[in-house]
Length: 211
Image (cartoon, rainbow, N blue to C red; front, side, top):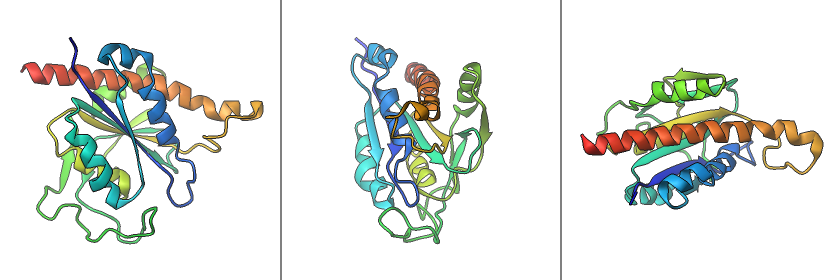
């Protein structure tokens, strides 16, 4: 019996982004039939509040559930293509408040942690996305906001973990009119490709477990 577990993470609203497409996308991936068939159940899907407090109150309890692999998705509003994040840095931005209007208490996310944490799975994920015909590139900078902070925390665990940044979408959560359907179509395409990445992470987790 397969007992693998997958954690999929997206994010909620934050200043100037009332509907975060990463949360919508995370839920679509979690409902993918391929993942349900492999896992025997729906993956654990968490849409985090875009606050520094949520790293401790929402992400850490999810990680404590011992998932075999973690796929994280965020939105980079100025990005022109999908960014496969290869690392997270031990830093925060003291000028940009979170969705609660609060700034991080310190410049460093972890006072005694390493300057950065890296993922070994970025290049394999990039290849999977490009096989789907998506415009994607490798990124070495996950920013200095909640995406980076959450990724840095998740990478502290010894399990296959990866963060994907998607470009911003207008009206991503309002597919009610036919004229808006083209704007929402990328979510369907991305969901299929990101499911490929999730499956790749689970294969890596199984390989790692047997080594």
